[in-house]
Length: 86
Image (cartoon, rainbow, N blue to C red; front, side, top):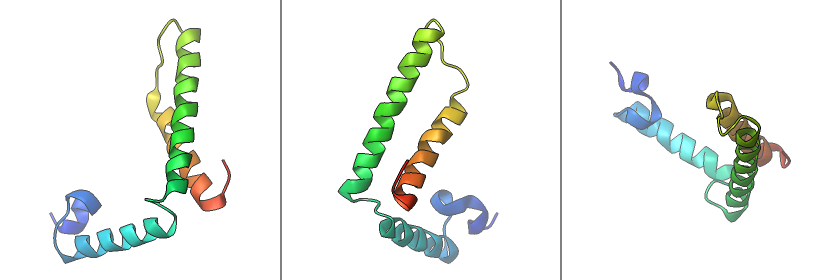
């Protein structure tokens, strides 16, 4: 298996180093590691916890199918960083 197939995290070699370098520089350009993005992530996490609490109350403590709900949070964060609103 080549380093490209293993991806950004598990890969090794020159191609993986180049992908990681590019990714880190791109994320910094969008504000990763700055206070503003920390606030966005914290806000989304709080809203998500509130949402889960409401769903658990409605469904006798059960919340199912978490994958799409987690994808919503991630999408909201990315959208907010790129476009400036949720």
